Image (cartoon, rainbow, N blue to C red):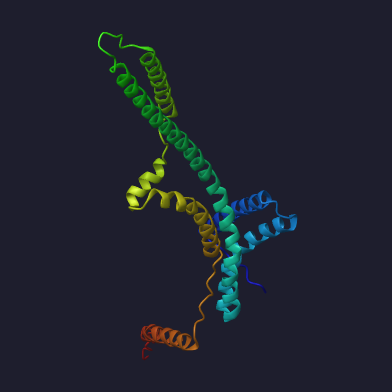
Length: 265
């Protein structure tokens, strides 16, 4: 008769959690393949590969227990391409949101840099025009009006340059400041690494956690150790111990028997 496997409550909870995480991976893999415009058979295959990858550790462990070592090693090796699909799909999903936020920060930073460059150019032009107007207006002959046509023209040009400089500074003020990632900055301060490294590898944490926990929970929950066989020597020792333990009781029973004494007539 086939033996029915009995799992504890914790084992069933672990299996349920692993199945839930595997279902999340299946949804992510299918959405990733659909977004890549993959053929329908590859989408279905990706879903099945994600499901089968969750039970590969259990199959490999059973093969290893049955001394089928080569098949067990092949199953462990098959997990590499199977999990690569899961990891790539999860990283693509989580990294796309972070890439969009970084793209917005780069646009703002570029806008601020352009406005600051325009401000520097406007300041240089305004300084040059003011210096030229001052030099022209100070070269008047004795008794002549210092504010001649050339001086007035240069002063008007300097006024226009100062107006452009004011507009450039207003544009810099409206551009705001470069946005940073507070989470990446805090993690970088704790781990003593660069913010770029944190922003690059932080999206990998959640996909790896989902995949690893799904595999481990299903493997741990479905694990059923084989019952230990009691050897013949131990059985014999137990029987002898029982026999030795029962002999004093028998002697006490026999000693407690009282024979009746017959009286003489």
